Image 1 (tube, helix red, strand yellow):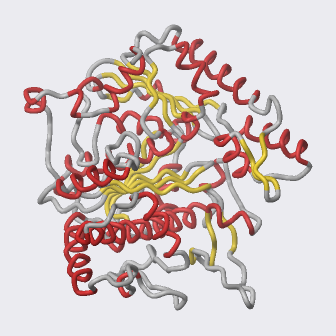
Image 2 (cartoon, rainbow, N blue to C red):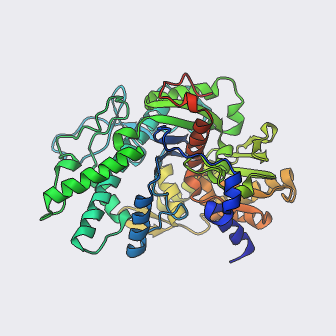
Image 3 (cartoon, one colour):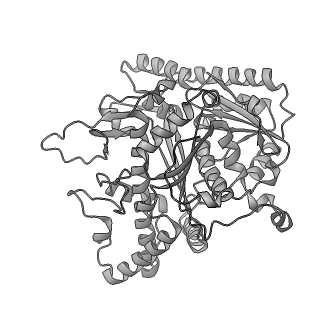
Amino acid sequence: MSAARDREHIISSGLAANTSSTHLASMEIISLAGLRIGPRFGVNAGHGWMKLVAVFERDEEAERLAMETARLTGDLVPDGTQAPRENELEVVFPAMIAEAGPQVEGSIARVDTVLWDKPYVVGEDALARNPRSIPAQVRLQDEEFIPILVRGAFARLMKLAQARINVLVAQEMTRLRGQPLRRYTLILAEELEELTGTRFSPENTGHGQYTATASRKAPAQREPYPGADSTLERQVRERIEARERARGAMPDQLKGGPARTGLPAAWVKLPGYSSMLGKRIRAGAPGITAMKSIAEPLALFYALALDGDGNRVNPSLMKGRQSFVDLGYLSIDLGEVYDMRPEDESLDTWELGASGPVQQIRSHISAHFDRQFETYEVEIAIRMGKIKVGSRVRDLPLHWDQPLIKRGMVIKDRLVARWKSGLQFENILLGGGWAAEERIVAPIQQTFDNSLLVVRPQTAVARGYAYLAAYQTLQEPSRHAHQPAEGAR
């Protein structure tokens, strides 16, 4: 393992690799047990992608079973490195909305809709209906765009939570029968498909878990495994649901609680922007009880310095000067902290996001294949190196990635002009949705050998928000009672 990769492994491994028992005793470690703050959320309404992360209570038995199943099936390991931790859920979809339109007579398709003044579809479902996206500051002025995105994200989160519980029941029944275990990710995808068209209502602040459409019975009412002992399955489900409710992981619990969000570094300083973002998010998720807004790049630091229980877990990040770069779709945000104290004057925003290269690539491949592609289709093509044209998956034309390579070099040059060698920093943390694009980050990592790619960079900002929500709630125990917030501050 190279020195750079060794540093990356150490910085992303949290307590296991970084903390001795002696050091732990000197750190501020406070358990959430007994505080009953419930789930905590990170809401990142990005310009390219909507990201939502929910964190609920840990359970040692659930974690052990998850690790054992992953090992036996060869599935992604839910250890926080290759996949979300067992007590975390992540929702990611393109930041697009569209009116759902009327249901055509004779259609048998089921689609998830978000109810606002009329039904809307979000994310990939919006592609078929003249999708609308607002990658600019004006999105804060729009009274429906962000609320619909957020409402759709929480509805998907509740659906993901229900599918997860169904998978836990299926896995336990499989164990009891002595049958071979199936991959968690595969069963989860099947369960989510089964839940398509089932109404989940994050805007409903009552205790109803969800309302199933007439097209399908609620999951708890069906018997998905022919020949299963229904009495045993009911007992298993009751036990698992009781445990998950105690953890705050049931669908109806994942629509309310403390949350954190943020804006590009330059936007945070503009009067009224943070409170306006808070207003829009709460309109989409009225169950949020408390909210604050920070500069987006700070969340990259919190994603590594904290954990979902609000503990400080990375001693290597507690001292010295750290910097971070959030590589987003519209902009690049950066900042610094010294001894865990953010330095306001270091926060900056550059209009060097991936949107420019993406649009150049879109024009290039649209001309090559003689058809127009949506931006979302182009982003998927960039990740895959191929694109679907008609019924065939085709290779992208030669030199299609030159705009990304050039953008990576431009960003690197700007960072060198600002930071010189960058050796004044203990670490330079790279995250954000486009930090996963090697053509952009390679010049930065080759130039700064103390640069580190944050684990699962696309959701790192939202994850940092959620961790910060837990940490700050612990610091204000008298204020965590579920009371409506007056605004994102």
